Length: 115
Image 1 (cartoon, rainbow, N blue to C red):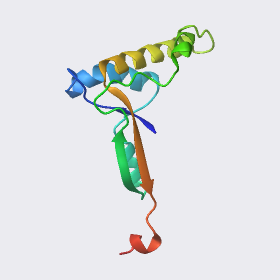
Image 2 (cartoon, helix red, strand yellow):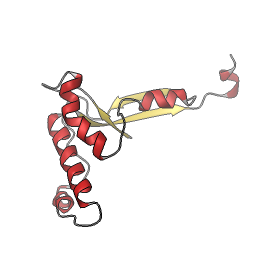
Image 3 (spheres, rainbow, N blue to C red):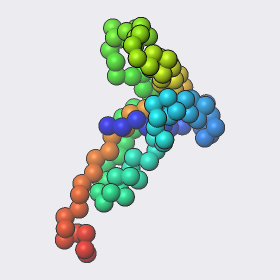
């Protein structure tokens, strides 16, 4: 499972998507969300399945509703970074440009690698 960015609804261009995903990337120190498949393939694996787990619908997050308010009440180290990151994720989810995807890959057999 991996975090992904995507076009969704009115947010179709790179500028529109990055309006929401830029802050997520900055606050969570993620340099890009669309590179997971390419990195897996560059590492020598063969991708057998890659999909947006929430294709066509908003991804609202994995935290159960009863835990969501707890995130906003956090008061420990790096409070601003933690809170702002959560707010950025919420905005990206609401815009539909943040989703979760799945990549399944296999290491090729040695004989396959040389054929």
